[in-house]
Length: 170
Picture (cartoon, helix red, strand yellow):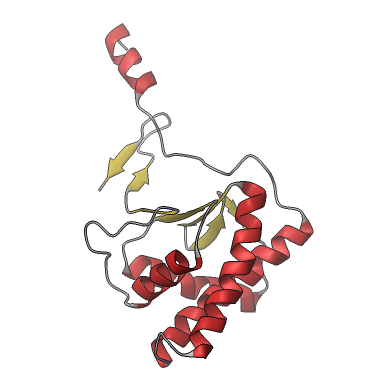
């Protein structure tokens, strides 16, 4: 490999890794599992009830309260998918079959919106959370310019083509 190619290869950044410095303890795993369940329930509810109903507001509050506790602890929470499994902060969760079924439903929502990962950052507001869940429930790709201050959507596909190669699609 020429020196120029080696230098270029070293300067190409890979996918961002934010909020991955801590590992989950048992209490955190339970909290994250609850967030996933409540997020999936909120998505189902928003398909059944008007967005302004108290039922939807209560669903959003559950997700928001649990999520912001974890985001405060980890500075961010990244929800992504790899090989059909939900990853939180780049780590697969050990789930029961029921919880795994619920998380796969969430992955379907992500896939229908072309979402590869969602990062929730410290400072997240309930309005941002509600807006995100409403957009996600529509099961279609987000429009250009759909942005939130404390929620990042990644639609890029990162593929390892070789041992040291990274192809970024999107």
